[in-house]
Image (cartoon, rainbow, N blue to C red; front, side, top):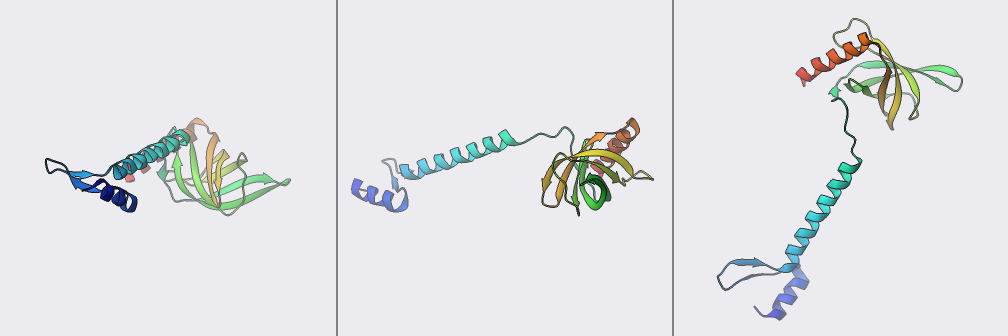
Amino acid sequence: MSNEKKARGAAVGGGTRWADKAGADKVGAGKVAAGKASAAKAAAAKAAEDKFATKRRFPRFTLDARLQVKMFQDGEFRTCWGRSTEIGQDGIGATLTGNLATGEIVTLEIPLPLTPYPIKVRAIVRFCQGLRYGFEFLTMNESQRDTVRRVCQYLATRQ
């Protein structure tokens, strides 16, 4: 194939195919460079994603339970309801009916499997996106901590 045809093919299709002296199929330099560029972009995107990813201290497990959130807003105590989505030994995720701000301190009342009564625990809002919230448990006594640990172990066997 002449150099002129190769150049036209590269301009139109991004690369050309031809056979070398041994008859092996070759790919034009345009496609090889494009493949390397897209691989480099993918690697850079993954590195950027890993840079901002935060590793959890404890794994999370799916938990669907109705919970109550009590907070102090605008000089008065308020209550809202929601459903938990996931739980870990250090926090819980939930979808709520109320509006909370990141950094706000609340009291959560959570009915857990394996327990006859809901646990009450203070938590801080660490994540907020629309109606979805993430809470980090703040004050838990040893009994509550043990209960949450047992519930997480139980949920791990069910998933």
